[in-house]
Length: 354
Image (cartoon, rainbow, N blue to C red):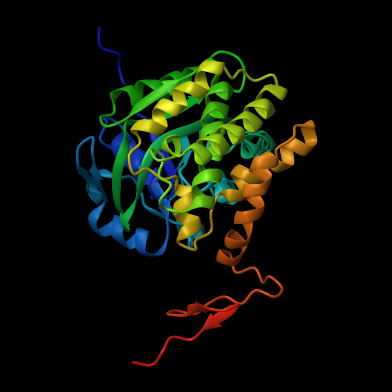
């Protein structure tokens, strides 16, 4: 017997590799009204073309006529107001608190907030914000997808088949609205929705993997794709050491992490040919990254829980300077190279004249 799919209003913050992909897939489900909160080039692209997806699960386009109101984050006062049934955060981890606060006018008494960020530190912050509003209800969530913006409003998805959203209650049984979300995600093509009874275990399992893999990969460089890590003894040894530290941290909170999870992730590495984490790609490209939300949080939480994290700490120390420079933070003694500059002894030399 087919399950009836409820009609829900979705507000998706961001139209990047996460929000754009999952928002578009949900928008194609009958009865769903999906609005995006975006700005600048993404705003113009969505209003002209809608959302376009190039995916190993099948290409698709959601035209503007099918979408709900497109909200300009730089002009919120004049934006159309409605109570969303679901607010889905598709932004980066370090942006989540600010982005969620921008969504407050669209949160009604029965609204569910579904975060999809990497990391674990921010979950309690999101829950606390929603509780302080005195309206709405926060879930715990994350997602598994390898995707990126090909151009504004155009998302390329090339690994994780199918991609999926993991979500669930912080405690207790699923609410009626949470079950409605599950029904919609089950009806969406090109993705899955995993409603988990022990969702924090699932989120930490991903966190352990993504943090340890980023530590090794981002520090080593683009040659260390995920499939390479198990093939190079030194890289695998470092990766396993990092995994062990984050697993110990997870267990210190009495959150379940089974031994078999680690070996299953080795198998994931082996088949992830050419795959890199989004945090690694951002660091290499000189963009702000989630390195502090991943590795930095392990360092901080490890100190709080008295769990040693020497491997993660060393990698974090080696990477954090890149992230600070990408954010425009002035670092004493550091000279940022200009375009075309090359390493010349201890300093940067200007490019040679043609």
